[in-house]
Image 1 (cartoon, rainbow, N blue to C red):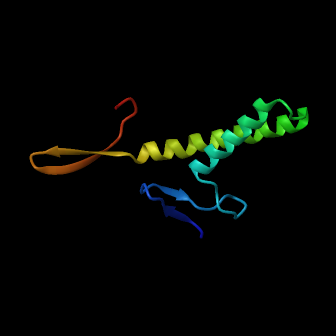
Image 2 (cartoon, one colour; image 1 turned 90 degrees about the horizontal axis):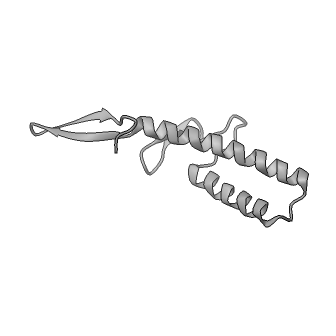
Image 3 (cartoon, helix red, strand yellow; image 1 turned 180 degrees about the horizontal axis):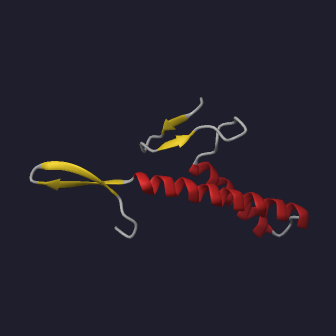
Length: 95
């Protein structure tokens, strides 16, 4: 797969990372973050390994934030006015 594709939620996302591999989904990133937290909280990780895990976690958080920001920009609310359905972009702070 290449380019962009629409997920089950209808949000377009890049299916490839810059190195040509399929980019992890938001769910995959959150799952990996949970694994990292468990390992770091376990306390049996060497300092260098802990730093690498921390850096990986920060990368996943940043990418997850980017994915969520893109999704937020695409969220539309259906509004019924005089029998007509219209859409408008979701505005930050609504909800």
